[in-house]
Structure formats: structure tokens, C-alpha cells
Image (cartoon, helix red, strand yellow):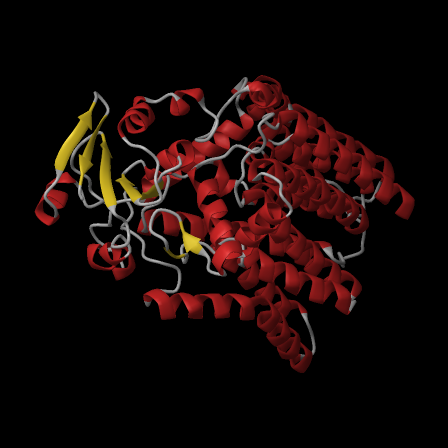
Amino acid sequence: MNKVRYVTGAIFAIAAFLLVMMCMPHTGAIYTHDTQSYEYAASTLLESGEIRYFGYDTPIIQWPPFYILIAAFIRLIGIPLAQGAAWVNAVAFAYLLYASALFLMDQLKVKWLAVPALLLMTASVPLVFVSGYAWTEMTFIFLSVLSVIFMLQYFEKDKKGWFYASAVMSSLCWLTRYVGVVVVAVLSLMLFIKIKPFVEKMKNTFIYLFISCIPMALWVARNYLISETFTGGRQPGIYTLEENMELSLEVFKSWTSWLNPLFTCIATAFFLFLVILAAALKKEKKKKVPGSLPALFTFILYIAGYSAVILASATASAMDPISTRLWAPVFPIWIYFMVFLMDILVRRIKTEKLKKWMAAGFTLFALTALVNPVAWIKSEALPRKDILTGSKEAPEIKNSPVIALVCETLKPSEDILVISNEASILAMHTGFKCYYPPKKTGIPLYLFDRYNERTEDFKSIYLVWVGDMESESFMDIPVFREKYEMTSVARNNCCTIFRIR
């Protein structure tokens, strides 16, 4: 059986790797303004030893540092970040499938259930989608899932190697995204519940928390010394809880109902039928279900905890609207939950033949549920290879009238600073040193007084303003006029260029 596990894992790992590369743009992972910030922070780390925030040249506190370290390594070996991120995502996705195959076929009593579960993970809309971007999401998913797998293996096998591996993965997971605190909280709670006797429980929980939390504790202490905040300032949220829940439902619908919602309805109804039927069938007298119940409870805690944190964060603070990139980390855990639920119900059915029929039924459910994701991959993901997209490659951005006007008006020089509410695309496509305008409200690090200190060394400063002259978040044109004697030097239908000094 061990050989079957490894062969199955290798097959799905290769399939996942090839799928990511087949859907990857030929220019590499899609490069956005977030990618630019990671790359800028990586470049400042290599050049000066400081991790700095694009657009303000302040120490970065908004994001934890692990993905920046990955970006720095990619840059250090001379590979463009977009190409390096493509390989990081593909390898992470491949190993995620490999580890999942070994984990499922080790822990499930009905081994065959692992195959449809792995199919659902491989041909999944959220995982294939985020794997195409130079973002933290695939790295975070990889680390969070491995943290959970390793801890559950420790519960099952009682080998300390799994315990320490989970603690290290949890630490790196939290250092990739702040929401990684959910992984640490869930696994520490499970340790406290599962481990006996009491002294061992306390010792293991303390060791796990120490290993997984010390790196983040050092990071947030550094943040507090810099900004008097642990994770940076956040503007108040612009979406209500109800709106965020509606956006979340739209995200889940996009994962499953791209071609025809009918297939999703059929698959959902069939899965519920299988659960009810398996629960109703005659059971064996055995009552103990080793391994599976703690695993199932862990998955429930993870899904509930992650959902609560994401919805609370999106409601309390301003961020991009809820989308696939925020919810993607839930998907592998949701698949684990479904297959472990079926395994718990099926393994206790008395008749072996009925067990096989139930496994076949779960396979049929998975194949039905895969119709829409496979259609999405064929129609949306595979064509992505030949599409120029993202802030760095999209022709409509490269050829925008904003960039054209700046290039016509200004000559690149190290003595020139360009301030703009579109600083990201200007820095990507013009070669100028670019800052965003100061924030109107927030922590002092981004307000005018501290910001103005960082502009003193530039001989000439220009303001390139795109769109409406007023802004809710940035110091806008009316406020700039109060601070500087500005002269308009160029204008078109999209933007205006002012000389500040």
C-alpha cells in the first residue's frame, strides 16, 4: 500500500505541476501592484538590508516578510520575479497534491475515496486561479495545509518529527500572511484538546506556540517600534458584513457554477444523499474511529476560524473586495472535510460491498462536481497562457495616455521624484522614482509631515494626478495647493502633470 501511496502522489503532483504551467502566461506569473511591492521590498533588502514599502520608502509593516524573502532569493539568483514566482507556485501546488495523496491514503480507511478528493483539488478553480499570480496565496495555502497535515499525522502516529515539522510550517505560514494566526490558533487548540495527560498537554502546546509564534512576535515588535502598530494602520471598512457575505457567496458560486449551475445542484444533492444514506445504513459494532474524528474537528475549526477572521477583517478595515484570492485557502480544507466525513460514515457500514458502492457514489459526485471547474480551466485558465495581462504586461496599461503624457513631458533623472495616485504603473513603465501621495488619515508614517522629510533630497518633484481631483484616502489636489505653489505643465483627458518644485 505504501508503494501505491507514493505512486498516486507522484501522478497527481506531476499533473498539478503541468496544469499550472499550461495555464501560466508565457510572461510568467501575472504581475500586479502587489507583486511590485514584494519585488521593491526584496530589492531594498538586498541593496540596503532594509525591507521598504513601495510608494513611500518606509519600512514595510503591512505584510509579514516570508514571501519578500522568497522574492529576494529569486532576484539574487538572477531570475525575473514573474518567472520565479511561476515555478514557486507550480512546485508548491505539486507538492501540495503529493502530500495530500500520502496523507489521505494513509488516514482514510476507504482508500479509494482519496482519488476523487485529489481530482477535486487538482482541477479546482481557486487553486488554479491563484497559482497564475505572483502573490502570496499559493505559498500560504501550501504552508497552511502542510501545517495541518503534519499535526494530524502527529496525532495519529505520535512521532515528534511530525510535531516539530507542523510547528515550523505554522511559523512560516504566519510569516507569509497575518491570517496565518488562524492556523496557529486551531492547531494549538487541537493540541490542548487531544494530548494527554495534562502535563504533556501543557508542554506540547507551549512548545508548539513558542516555535510558531516567536518569529512573528519579533516581527510585530519591530513593527511597533517603527509605527506604534503591530500590523500597520488600516482605514475603516467600506463594506458591511452583509455585503461581504454576499460577495463571498458570489465567489463560491464562481468556483462551482461557471458553465451550468445545474451540475452543481446535482452534485450537491447527490453528496447530501450519500451522507444521509451512509448515516442510515447498518453499522458495525465498533465505536472507535481512530484519527478521523480529530481530523474532521480540525477541518471544521479551520474553516470556521478562517471564515470569521476574513469576514471580520473585510468588514472592519478597508481592503480589496472579497474575491477568490482571499477565500482560496479554505478550498483544500473543505475537500478534506468532505472526504473525511464520507470516510467516517462509510467505514462503519457493516457490508463490504456497500462500502464499495458508497465509494463509487462519492466518485460519481466528484466527477459531476468537476464538470464546471474543468470547463472553466478549458475556457479561462488554459487561454491565459497567451494573454498579456496584469499591471506589467497588459497593452492597455503600457499604452495608456497617462504613461504617454509622462514620457513626453519628463526626462528620466535620479533627481526627479514623481508623486502620483497611479504611482505603481508609472514606476513599472517609465523608470521614474515614484511615490504615492501622503495619506489623509492613518499612522504618522504615511502622513504629510513624515512624508515630506523623504522628498527633500530630490531636486525636482512633479505631481501626476489621474482622474477626479479629490480623493478620500490620498492627500488630493486641493490639499496639495495649500502646501505647495503648483504649476500645471501638461494635461490630457486622463491626467494632469503639476510641477511642485
